[in-house]
Length: 78
Image (tube, rainbow, N blue to C red; front, side, top):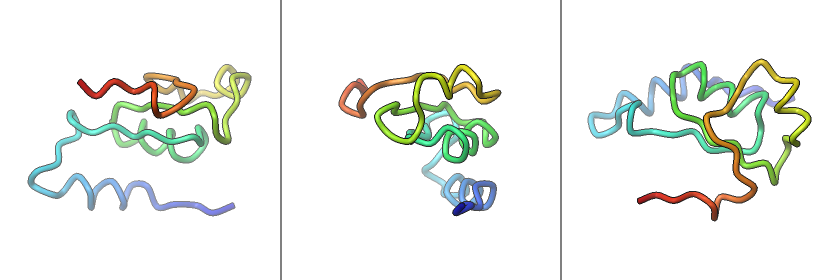
């Protein structure tokens, strides 16, 4: 399994003067790594369920994304 160093990745990204955690979301398709990393970093999370994570996985997981969508096209950025 490819483990990403999320704490370091988020610290580097959020260290940029123009980036703030309250204005940042983590949108990915893997609940166990990507969404978990976003949650642990205190970010709002969006799980795209068309990828690696299925609905039953969400129910069993201790990590709950803020939002679940079927496709990134469902995101309203306004």
